[in-house]
Image (cartoon, rainbow, N blue to C red; front, side, top):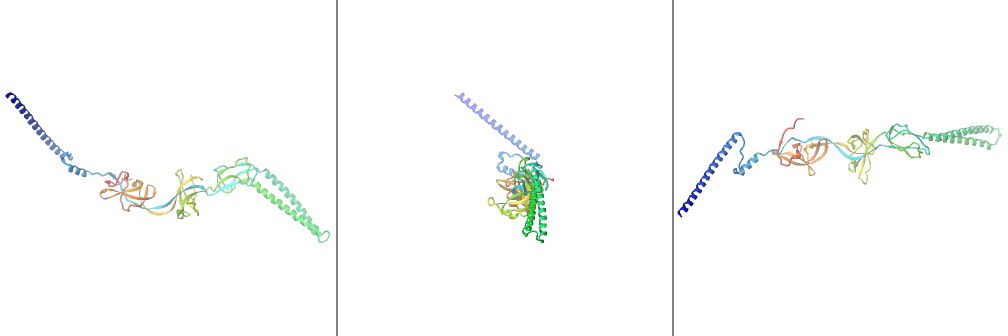
Length: 399
């Protein structure tokens, strides 16, 4: 019994000794860590590096460090609006057409086309031969009428001689007054027949000249339906001619804007291939289409360039000039269907401002409303900014 109690007491004593040793080792390690931490703080201070806060340092110290480390969201350049004088333009759409188009046909029927000398795209001059009809039949008719005219002239000469002899015998009383009147009537009838034959000859000569189909004016052949060997009919179209090779742009303008357009104003149209052509307003239509409520503005194109009759073109009509407050296109941000700029506010904070835009010329945009004349705005990187961002402003690099 005594032996067992001695054994238990020995075990308890050994456990207490082990526990004391462990506590002593822990305390020694803590002191070593404290020494090392202090040494690290000293080294960091000597090296100019801020010490890293441990979780035990507290939340207040971490928040203070985060506030002190706030950095700008973006490095930007700025600009101010520019006051300029910009043209006022009216946008319009329309078709390019011939100023005047001449339809050329034949006045002679039943004759064969013997020769065609021009084709589509040829430039012709007034009086130039375009085509020729077979004229053998007309030549024969002219010869026949000439013979009939000669016969009528001979008959007239005989009738005049008889009438002159009768007039001389009238004083002698050798013939009666009735016979004398008959001779005079025969002379007048013969003269009328001569005049009729001369008129027939003139008509045939005109018909003969119409076998030569010539250009009535200068221009460009825009269409050709004449085929050599075919028999033409009166009034049938053989050629179509753009008179003087002049084209015009027939711009469709809303009826409410027609009073703003005046003859002589400058217009610029853009073709489908991107080329531009200058023109002048020639006339403004006096009426408006009751269905579309659009009116036509006729713009002369002295130098049509690549424009062709029948093509569609967009363009603008210059109505004058007006002052404009403009900014670079790069300073404008489009979001959710609205336009914004970023004004530099106090503390270099970006302030998002909604604006209304107007005309655009090149890389500049007119600001109609929402921006003061002296406002300083960001003109680079606006797509990466949000309202309230801190920005760092730098000077623009020289170009």
